[in-house]
Image (cartoon, rainbow, N blue to C red; front, side):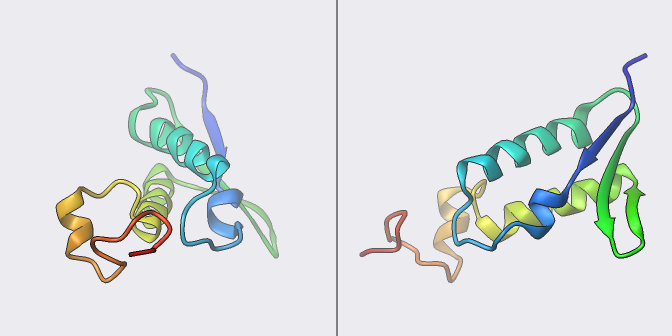
Length: 96
């Protein structure tokens, strides 16, 4: 049986908000997606709180990853991006 994974979501939850993810953010999302969606063993999300580090279930981890993806619009199709208010038809930097 695969080992249990405790994945730290601190970077995805408390990183400085940016319009586009940094390279490390993309790596963090990719690892989190892999572990929470397809890891065959147990997988938990961990986050620091004022009461200490807390452990959350796999479903919570997936919701955090989905929220990060929705915020950055990184994994939407071109048609879905065109329908958003985030600058349809513009380049990556938002310039026309």
